[in-house]
Structure formats: structure tokens, C-alpha cells
Image 1 (cartoon, rainbow, N blue to C red):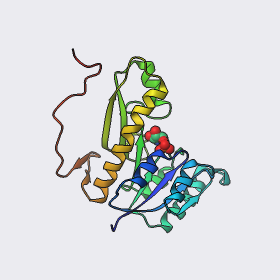
Image 2: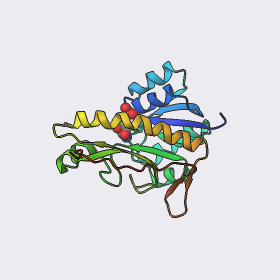
Image 3: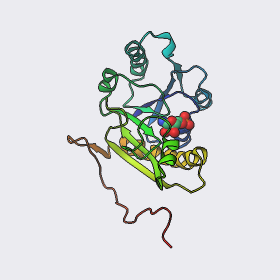
Length: 213
Ligand code: GRF
């Protein structure tokens, strides 16, 4: 267990919780929130993880907030910084400081549906397959190199809530997997901005939705 991570949250923290409840091959050094009332902070405390709050409201602009946040993160000297429902757009300076070490989970099959309200937008477009993505963070919002994705079917009577629930279940599985790979040095970030994985079997079947008769 020589690697460590810091997890950044803003709210409920179910992805963080899934990580804390799993057997990770790394130490969770701290959980940091930009909101003092984030429910996830209590979950982290219950797991005995050090927590901190850096409120964006205490800072006049993004740059000064990001500098304060980086200061706290660096106190813990993590190998990776894990964004788990952290709802702040980070400056290019911050992102570049953690190049190759800053990871995010996004509730869509990127590069489709970057940004907010992904489930509503997917339903409006009538897509039949939706999902989630774990990726390295770059200054290009929601466009960093992809590590792993999970696809789920969209059902005809789905609401944003039912679809979100199906996607969230997979988020919890793939984030854990991505962090395991990262901590075991199994993820390679290539110069062309694409990710390859060492010793990975490729699946040989398709997810077809709705299913064939
Ligand atoms: C997740 O859907 C995640 O993909 C997105 O924000 C949500 C956070 O949920 N970035 P939680 O706080 O982990 O429960």
C-alpha cells in the first residue's frame, strides 16, 4: 500500500463511499469538500478518514480557490487526486499541476454529453445506450483521456432518476476498477492522449439496446 489518494467531493459522496467500502490497493489520505454541508463528509469521518473543507465562497475567484485547494491537497502528498462529484470547474493551472494524476468520473459516455444534466439530455435525444466514464482530467472540460467506460441500456419508460440510478451503480464499479489499475501502474497514458491498459482482456460482444429478438 505505498500509493495514496485524496478524494474531492461536493455532496452526497456515493462514489467516494463505494471506494471507501472497497478493498483499494492504496491509502485514502483525505476527503476534501468545497461545501461544509456535503453529506459525504460524514461518511468519510465514519470511516476514520481525515476531512477538510475549502469553501469556494471564501475566495474571490477561481484562481485563489484553486490555489488554496492545492495547498491542502499537497499537505497529504497523494499520488492521485480523485474527483468524485466535485462540482467546481478547475483552472488550467490546477489541472496542469496534477497532470496525469487527476481523475474524474462523469455520468455519460464521453465525449457525448459533457457538462451537466447528462441523463435528461440523453433521454431527450432518445439514445438507447448511455453510461459513465472515468478519465484523466485535462483543461478541456470532460474531454480528457478515457480510462474505462460502462454502458447501460436506456429503457423506454426511463426518467432521469431511473436512468441515473442505473448509471450510478456502474459508476461505483468502474471508478473502483480504474483506481485499482492506476495504483498498480497498469494504466498507460500515451503521448497521443490515449490510454492503454497492461494485461487486459478485451470483451468480444456487443451491448445492443433494445435487445434483438
Ligand atoms: C456522479 O453521478 C458523478 O458521475 C458526477 O456527480 C455525481 C456524484 O455523485 N460527477 P456522488 O456524490 O458520488 O454520489
